[in-house]
Length: 197
Image (cartoon, rainbow, N blue to C red; front, side, top):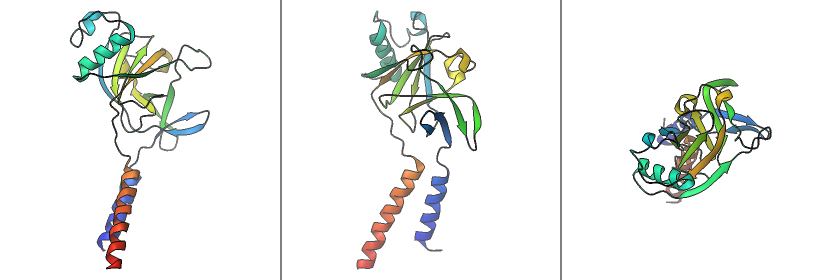
């Protein structure tokens, strides 16, 4: 088997391992990438839970920005804030059940849309303590994809996302299928050059 055939086969194998996680919205099935990385959680009303990262007297968005900067170890800028969009409760952000494979529920996980495509975001859960958790966005910056355990809740019934605050510093992780296409393109260019010579 020549090198070109081996590389084509390898790229299809890589593409076959692309994320199979999705949610079903009013617009149909949406691929949501991979589970986002949990970084920290705290109670926004109790400074003792976040004084490792911030000890000042900021409140609201400034407090969230300062704590996030403290956790990450560098200054972040607030990109935007998403508030409720749930038609049944305009104060609550819609959380979707995650599925994989042939429609099986990915138990213990949920996803919600992100408006600004961040590198990091925090979610404020009005229904639990600790009420705020910070995540690093992975693979698909259009979706937040979380584990219930990381948010301190047991299921979607206990989840009331009052808002999501998004910060700069986008993490770009190429999807395997995109990487495979790039490899094939480079191989094609190399083959065409060789044929011209």
